[in-house]
Image (cartoon, rainbow, N blue to C red; front, side, top):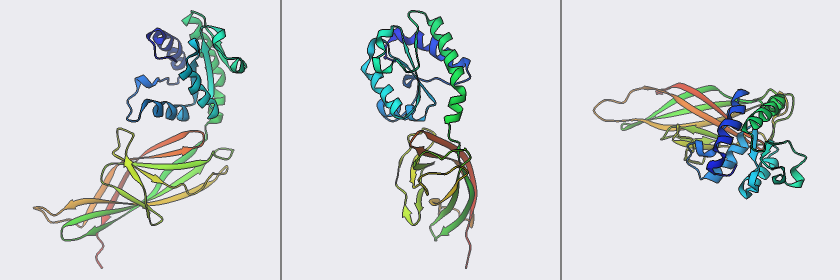
Length: 270
């Protein structure tokens, strides 16, 4: 919707109230905290959401462009307007609500529409599941430092009845100080775009698509300095624990899988 105070009651009392009535969550970008620029945030939110609700009132060009992007992403879209003339001719066959000046009518009509598409939302969700099924830890030591070597075995499953969308790439989100390799090649990394994590590392998907019931596995190895020699001797074993997040980016939407890790890195003398 246009960024204007005249739409605040429409959003809070009409749209958001109808969405929450259906046990869903509605957000505008101006309610969120993010590190990327606003346009990138809008596009990523459109990519990852289940439904896009767009108020076409006043024929705002930004709204028109963003709804075009949502249609290109094959998203479920509900169009709103206070004036039927604001819906372009080639969009009039799309699901839309004309609410005039009544927020009560908007809330009632939108809530009804949302109830009618909940099953469609669920059927569109591709239940790609991702989990770290095994971790192993080793310790590399010198007289001055100890470095942990942790291997992650990551399983991807498609438990749906249809083929998955294309798997574009995966990100592994971690704390600071980690570097990762995959198949002997260093994983590119950058600062995280998620506040709870410091770094993100690119992981190559092992397969382009997962068939129904399909499975694939990725192995990555992480390295991190765990201790430096100071007043105390370096230990022969260190426990590494914390949280990571694996983000799978597909051609249709983005899936996030937060998880905890705990592994012991031991020095094995030879």
